[in-house]
Image (cartoon, rainbow, N blue to C red):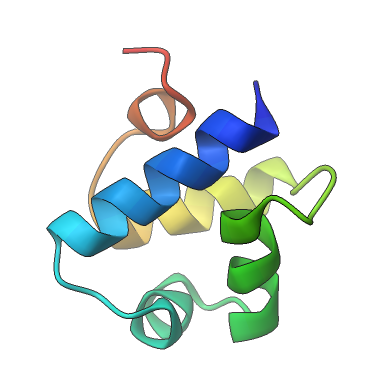
Length: 69
């Protein structure tokens, strides 16, 4: 999984759903700072749990989020 691709996909899906970073972080039950780091690519290796929470909050599969589909 490319961190850059993950970051781009999170941003793309988030904007498509009309969500702010803060709102998505709340829906995913993660810290806003964590989401910002992931979305800007400064988080080196987000955990699969965090990625799964973001995917669930966006109502998409993990595969879609990481660009496997």
